[in-house]
Image 1 (cartoon, one colour):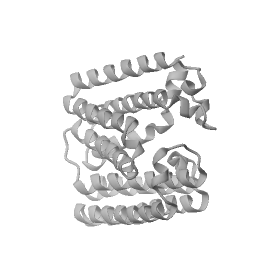
Image 2: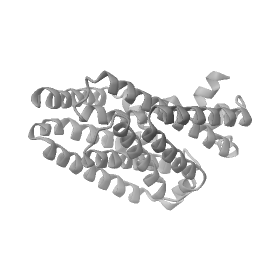
Image 3: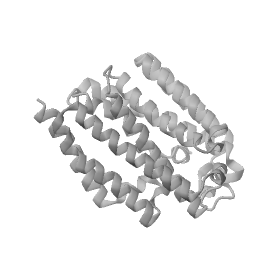
Image 4: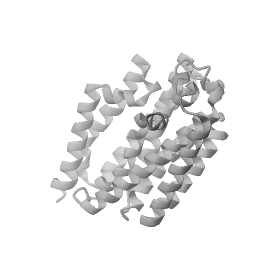
Length: 280
């Protein structure tokens, strides 16, 4: 049963919670052991909260998922995990994680509660409204980044937070385009989108994301401009895969693209060199 519970929490989606580590990296605290412990704790808390919300979402959409060619194999939709057990486990996980965060770091607890409330609203109401659904997803990414800064008590550049917000737009519009073209989901709000509309919104989001990161680099220090080619190429590569291979359905597939992984590694190295060696 434990395996079914973990599977229902969709651990393959937990990479989104890595956003909490932006604060420790870009605040010049990469080598602070205590801050890493706090950041890892925040990461675990968000994995538990987001995973529990996935369980609640699967219980709510049980009947619809049973008609879906892929979702019908999920533990709850297939009957391998009962509704009652799933809900009980999700409530237990949510209560435990929030209580632990309240004892260890109250700001993290408050952000976690806000994140939970917004996602529950999304699950029951907001995901049926086009554009609002994407806005909520983007806000969720921002809350993760803010939590990462609050848990170690540092300030993160507003430009960097804006980059996180716009990055979520790129991921979400890419996914909506994939869903619309493949009809691979029964998402109600898709009827309120068109392919042309999603492509325009995707292109606008990409342009704003790149401009925001360029401005962040410029206002941080001149040498951060060295990281621009890697950042730009990473975004361009993702868009290329969206259009050529309809890659947007599951953004985590980017982790299987060797070119993207190599470019990401080069970007990370360039950021660390600039922030911790050049700026030392």
